[in-house]
Image 1 (tube, rainbow, N blue to C red):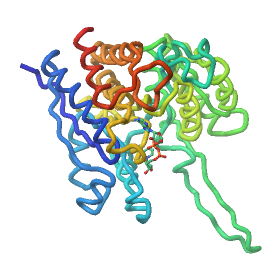
Image 2 (cartoon, helix red, strand yellow):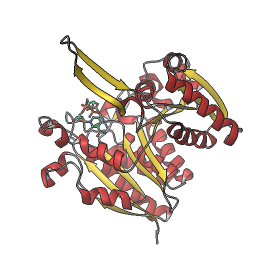
Image 3 (cartoon, rainbow, N blue to C red):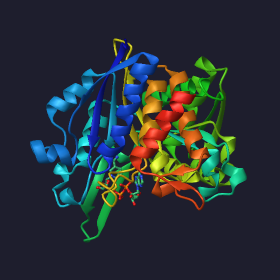
Length: 369
Ligand code: NAD
């Protein structure tokens, strides 16, 4: 009998979202029958699917369910059907509301290069083979939210646009803590990235990170780097990094840059974490980086690996099931090493498989490991 260890809310969404989520469903079943780990799952609509059924991209009832469970697993939202909707009725608003209401301030974007895919990177094999770095982006502060913001018309008829980069020491400290804790579970190195040479927020960022490291995490190696240099280093020698922690804007750019070191969008997982609540639970949402891919939706060809790797992150970060997360990641690596490929990562001489066949091969590998 499987022991119930957690409640999960599955939000498959639109396009390929439900197709890749179905493969996670099979892994959840496998964990129940083979490992005795029972997840109580509920499924709800989000994005375009929710708009069609309820006229909003996220209902209050679904939000309440997201707040009640131990973790949320999100597929993808969006598609041409809803592109002409007014801004507040776009499918993406469902995701933005979830992030805001759950207070998800820490965005984890790992960049891991599977040996079998090293040749698919835009960098040379020796630079990316064995790459395993984590970019931690602050997600709810900084220039995307700072006030004042807007566009005004000046007396001389010109327009003037303003965005404000703003961080409090409390906001920096809470993302800093996540970085140090992550590093302790990895290779124990944090690189804090800002532009203290030209920005006041950068000066404060460096000051807070330095004090936090010295006071509470003296065992973790802390270094500092300017964001422009970090961009260069990521494409020059990415393996020098372990955990990179940075603000919302720099994190947006640097995480996309790091992502491309590893090949396809169909391979990239992510996690967004919030604060720890009174019961000791950390709010969390796990999702692939890719969108709903309307160009291939319904064809059974989507790569389920980003979704499955997001689920592995959930096992590791929400439930401390590092061994099961490692096993799922090892199964993915083994299937790739055997030459199975979905269309997006297809290479000459490899075997092209469907979404379902990729999921089945990973399950078979889990049985073997
Ligand atoms: P996309 O990520 O959906 O697709 C970009 C390209 O990558 C497409 O050619 C697609 O076929 C391919 N691709 C993506 N995921 C794949 C996978 N798992 N397997 C194989 N190929 C894959 O981005 P887009 O085309 O810019 O956007 C499509 C829709 O998704 C839009 O409505 C957009 O707003 C939305 N979107 C949603 C999210 C999200 O839900 N978090 C993120 C990005 C885009």
